[in-house]
Length: 318
Image (cartoon, rainbow, N blue to C red):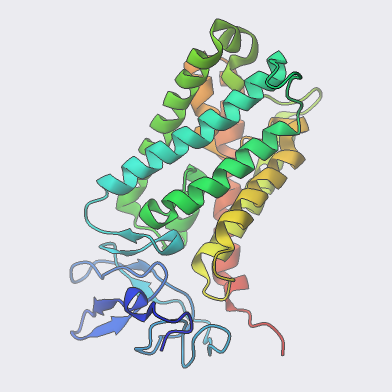
């Protein structure tokens, strides 16, 4: 029996081995590709038993973990939050496009409203509204789209998963392309919502560094805050030991915390797509674009590698 009753059938996945036969995998497990194709990593831990949940001999909480990572291929299988990614990536890409559009439109619209001091219910937004808007909408999007595409909505997350072999590399360009297009459309929507003033005065909420913040400092800050976000995503979305149902709230709060931290210094992009969408449409801050590409990608990869190779292998004491 699965330790989250009634879901055993959903979590059991058969995979052909190169030498014949099948095995079970969980989490990011995907079918092995053609013979000789190098697979990417699936779920963590020892080879699971046919019961499906967890690794080794027991399910969640009682799993024996050998520290080895399971290998699987680049076909169909499971992604973040139980999503299934098959050979037809189009539905997932559409979900990524829509989700990134909603995330970036919500956040940039609130940034523009706050900077322009547009009143909503008698008084304008203050800076507190910005991290709350990004965080709350991400909670909703993970709940709404997590089971469809994994709700990456961020190239730093997609690349972090791919580097640790938890997401197929052949899907990476499709996902990142969808995310960038969604962010560009979101910037256009923000422009339409607030008019020329939003583009000319606020740059459609293109992120910018604060006074006295240098290039290297800004990159390091973006590395730090993106590390926080991706570490939380990897933890709650790929580890069976994380409490069920906590993922959307944890991920949304992590993004809000990252923006609280980095807002005064870098504008807190925490997401290359969120930065590049407004930069492209407003056609400004190109001199800062590398900060918001390099920093989040490094931070996302570091978080994924650290969790996959060290933290995921730890068992709680007692």
